[in-house]
Length: 264
Image (tube, rainbow, N blue to C red; front, side, top):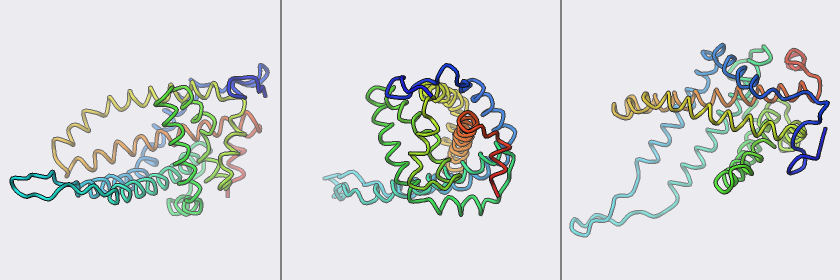
C-alpha cells in the first residue's frame, strides 16, 4: 500500500482495489432497511434509558438567585454534570458495542442473542470507554478548529470499536484499526463526510417528529428522542460494520462469508 499520501498513508496504491465510497453508503442504507426491525429495538431500549438519565440529571438544574424572594444562589458544583457525563459515556459505549456486533452479524449473515452481544461488549467496556473518549475528544477538537484534521482522525481509527468487540483486540483496538485503514484514509475521509451529510438529511426529516414530541411534553418527548437516537445508533453501527468488512475484504481477502466462518 502506498504511504505517500498526506499525513502518511492517504490514498490507496494504484493497483489496490478502490474502497467504493458510494457503494458503501448505498449498502449501508439497504442493510439498515433490511434489518431495521432487528437493529432498531436493540438500540431503542438503552437509548430510552440514556434519555431518561439526561432528563433526570437535568431536573436538578440550579434555581436562579432572586434577592427579593431570598431564593438560594445557584449551585455551581460540577458533581451533577460529571455524574451525567460519566453515565452518558458508559451507556453510550455499551450501546455502540452492542450495536456494532449486531450490525456485523447483519453484514456477515449471522445472528446472536442480545445477551451475547451485551456480554461481549461488557468484557471490553474499559478500552471502549477510554479509547472512545480519547478519540472523540481529538476528533472534536480537529473538527472545531479545521474540520479536515478531525475527519482524518475519524478516518484513521474508524473501525476501532469493531476490532475491539469483534476481534477481541482490547487496548490494541487503535493499532488494529490503523492497520486496516492504512492506504485508504483519504477515501475514508470522503466517505465519512458524505455519511455526515446523509445524517443531516435524515435529521432534517426527523425534526418534525422531535418537535411534535417536545410540544407533547415528557410523555412523548422521551420515547421520540430515544427513537431518533436509536435510528442514528443503528445507522452509524451499520456504516462502521460495512467499512470494517470492506477493509478486511481488501486487505485480507476475507469476504463476509469468510468472516462469518470465523465466528462461533
